[in-house]
Image 1 (tube, rainbow, N blue to C red):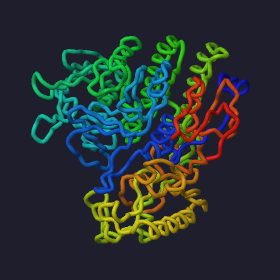
Image 2 (cartoon, protein in one colour):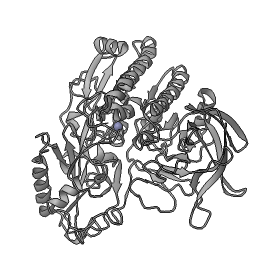
Image 3 (tube, protein in one colour):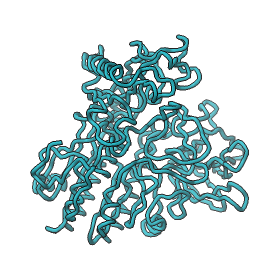
Image 4 (cartoon, protein in one colour):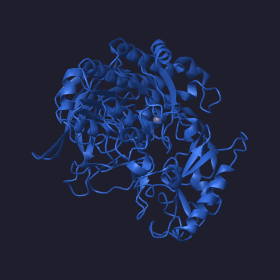
Length: 606
Ligand SMILES: [Zn+2]
């Protein structure tokens, strides 16, 4: 990484204190607002309504008919096409707008729908696909051995090959105009060459040929919700995985079409269309890398990597188009590649990981390094354009660590008597929480780091009185959690537990979890406990390709901050970035921002 090392040696390079907890929606909200979760109200990927205990995604809410959130099938309703931004507090670019500083903000996480702005913004993480989910792929197969139906992040759809022809449906948004809101569908057909590994796909008057192992370009599709009335446009990419002996076709989640978006994804609203005209089609869904398809085995490492490389290629194309136009003000650009691919490929560079595989590592063990090198090339395009009047900030919102073992917080709470069940068998028989006896339950886990007291007057069936009883329970839980050891490794599982009231400032300090559980390196909340389900074991090996993570003790996973100017603050934090950007234009930070410019040496204690 020659460009990063040049910037580090000629400019400044510091660790960057991340958010509590160190999850992307929280971290980026800290950066965007200069406040912590107490000020912007984003505590986790997943929040809960205390009155119903129903979990929902924290970054945005899309209005429509209610669906339950199911394990393995996280569906947020799309409905009539309205969406609500849940982050509170002013974004730094709103303040820049007030002072007439031009700005463009590309795919910053936790900005969907984009807040009204004068500049050009495009929403990123938090943006749903056309179905209103965070990405639902489809995989079509005639393999009778394949398990069909819903899987995490997608669905496997059985098809028949008859006379070398396949007829199937693309699945669109729920048709809320119809009784029962069934999903809208659009037919497509595949003609498979009887001898060669080639197929011709026809959808809505468009025809294209794919060889086995080949991806299509973006294909535009339109779903008819009510004849002549409500049509929504989307786009998807087809991947012909296999023609013979079995047919297998992957179709990406149907993305919102940037040329004609069904939900607001940019400011001005015409900006996403302009971008797609100038730089070509691109993934609009928040997390574009199809990590779920890799996790469930619908795409293998090489197939996923090709998809992930396409995402970065799209971003680099847009970067080149947009950065060339930048003259003055603020230019912000977010690259998702290092985060998502470190999640997926840690297992191939760490022999201690339970999913390490020497043969796979020989093929793709340098995948993470390759993405770092590509980002270094982007930096190499930027450095020669800098002058003395231009400040460059390069940062990551958090670091990374291995994720070897899962800690199932709710199972631990159950085993330690904090959660009581109505009967002792099969705690999840009909969904998360279904068998919990709330009249005897004192605390529960939800989200990646959240631990909540079942508080009287706040939770629907709360039993712990607020005040001294809650404080005592919080203290007891903290002590007990810090003493949990993994007998397999002899290591503490949890190295830090933060009490919300001690670490958050602002009006929302008490609307999130009461405790933030900080896992040791190598440990994370298990996949099921996150949504309130129970497992038989408290600790389990993580056998998911999602093998690196950062939702841990925040002091163990700091981000990095580099600048071409001298950073005066020894330990800068994400909450310093908004004040820093404002200070560069002589704008005073707003009084609820808790950080300060990293270029000023007199850090005030707070
Ligand atoms: Zn991440």
